[in-house]
Every structure is written in structure tokens, then in C-alpha cells.
Length: 148
Image 1: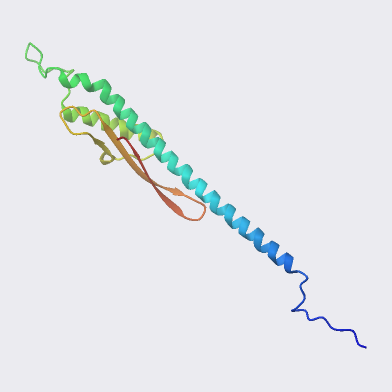
Image 2: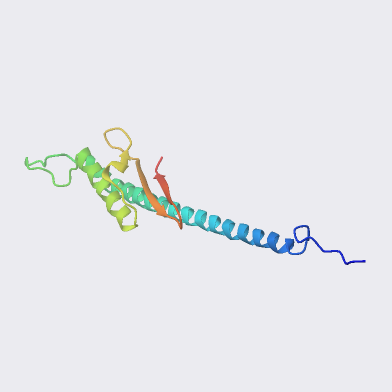
């Protein structure tokens, strides 16, 4: 009797190797995806921190300048009072602080990104920023908002 020839295509040896290579490839791809999400979340938190610091700094400026809104606009001798601030000056000072502090913290804050509550003497400020975070293979757009 002649020995049987084994069919190479029906042979099961080596199938485990192919399965393991597939699992390793899936793990590598999964790790890259998780790393990209980590980079995106880190970038988002950086934008959020910058918006928060800009908002808090603007609120501090507003707190410090608030009494100056109620100063008389002229002194008793008729000269302009240098301590007096108009509402527009009050808001402009807070807006400039928010833009400056946002920039110092690596977040670009435009003057239009800073908004205030309504009224004669606004006491609330909001700062909204947006930016792009470069991830290993695709940019992710982040939007952060600080304030009420």
C-alpha cells in the first residue's frame, strides 16, 4: 500500500499562527486608536483650562473695577474723575484681560469670544474658545466654554 499524500490546503497546521498575527494586529490598531483619543482629550482639557483661566481673570478684573462704575464722573471742582469708569470701559478692560490671559495659557481668545451678562453693571462673564488638536492621524476640533 502506498502512503497517503496529505493535501496542503486541508492541513490545519499553521492556522494558529495566522490567528495570532490577526490578534496582534487588532491590538496594535486598538492601541493607536486609544492613544489618539487620549491626545484629543488632553487637547480638549488644555482648551478648557485656558477658557476657565481667561474667564476667572476677567471676573477678577470686573470685581476689582466694579466700585469704579459708581464713582461720580466729575469731581466737585468740575474736572473729570479719573477713578470713574463707564460701562463700556469696564467691559473693555475685562475683555482685554481675558484675551491676554487666554493667550498666556496657549489658547487663542478673540474679543468676540468674551460675553457678559446684560445690565448697567454686568457681573458675569463667559469665555468660549475653540481650537484644533493634532492627533497622530487626524485633527480633532475642540470647543471649550467657561462661564454660566
